[in-house]
Amino acid sequence: MPLVTGIELLEDARRRDYAVGAFNVNNMEIIQAIIAAAEEERSPVILQASQGAIKYAGIRYIRALVLAAAEEAKVPVCLHLDHGPSFEQVMECLRYGFTSVMFDGSHLPYEENVRLTAKAVEAAHAVGVSVEGELGKIGGVEEEIRVEDWDVVLTDPEVVPDFVERTGVDYLAVAIGTKHGFYKGEPKLDFERLARIHQLMPDLPLVLHGGSGIPEEHIRRAIPLGVRKINIDTELRAAFVGKAREVMAAKPEEIDPRKILGPAREAMKEKVKEKMRLFGSSGKA
Ligand code: 13P
Image (cartoon, rainbow, N blue to C red; front, side):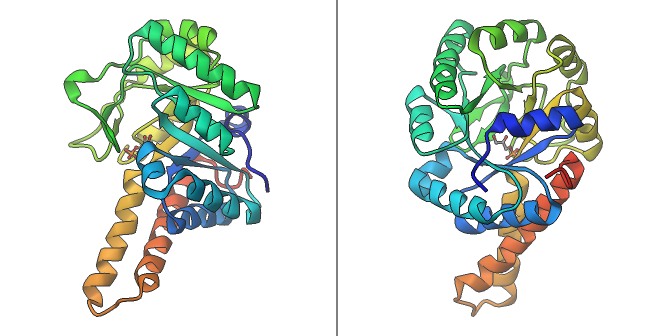
């Protein structure tokens, strides 16, 4: 199947009240694990590449691997740029056939975030690609982006309509207390804030970053409040590397990478399937 745009997936998720998992990828086994999970669950899926992934694998490899996976897949697959730092990066991804891009201007002053996001939207929409913006500042460490606790800025709901109208973004990452990476203690999500954003913009698909480690009941509560895309990276890495470590500890003489990465891929697939069931995307493709 050819790649589909982010908004196609998130519109369906909105209509049928579920969320699509957006899983971070940077090598062949990870892409295969996520696609196999999507096929087994009959779930739509978003594969996303961050700056770190693009640096590590190269944009050509990411594109080629994702296209190879999507070509064979019977479920809809979207290729998304996660936390695009610049207009140039957005343009490169458009050139390489990404079907969704994020422009992350959350560290910029508001007017600058509006101006640059609108510019990214204009370019992406011209070639039929949908765009995610970010308002507020999400905490934690996401590859090359580190936001300390004191620097977190939760999304001001009252500003959301202005931002969406002036930029034209198709979906919006909101800061409501989630964090990239593992949580120390129980994460505290600001559901009142989320509900207010959803009340002001009921048709706007919202994006939850830092999806790893959020208790299941919080996820179930967030979805009917407009969350349609949930980003997961850390938990998948932990499943993959945890299994690879286990195999290496049990068989220290093993030198065939396939015997280590194969089981790691399988473990990651199971974790992705678990998330798809939780998000309600299983059976929706
Ligand atoms: P986690 O690593 O916390 O799952 O967050 C992933 C993410 O939000 C990528 O943008």
